[in-house]
Length: 248
Ligand code: MN
Image (cartoon, rainbow, N blue to C red; front, side, top):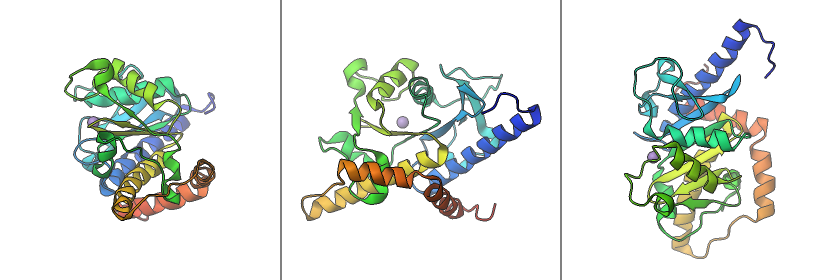
């Protein structure tokens, strides 16, 4: 993003990004990725050391006025007295460790949970799920933190989770949920929906027999294709319409 934008132009860039973030909240709720809990964030497009995320509120009811800004240590910018998400540290930690990531979701999509509990690896089995990546590790808070309330409510825990994410688009959390990360908001929404769909598909397929997964080469090629501008724009239009914002 050029540094020499006029103040008005800078504000317009931030306003557009925040509006898209609000719509992403509604989409992820509509698609049953995020429910009463869970969240989505974006890095500030004008300042990589800051990110936007809603205040502690269910994504289905998030509005523009609910969006807060934080630094990467999870400190709120401004004097907003409203309560932030306890698990916002997931987002700041990933933005710290992954300069390529500009959007993050954290959710507890139910079809994904068995793969956080059982020793069955989750891997893409259909082409639209290639975006979830070749490797999905499971982070277990017990390893470094022992018995906790299971929330990633400190920067230290967020950084531990981000280390297990590594360079991948998805990490699972034992007995808890998942985190998805991507270079832009539309991509992280696609990855989050595909993760849920793929988990349900693999579970259904396992009832019938041995599951055939995509090869590493298929995952690379299909993922590069799906995360291109055309498929993302087309999918975004569809999700926006399903969330009730068609034509906006
Ligand atoms: Mn959670």
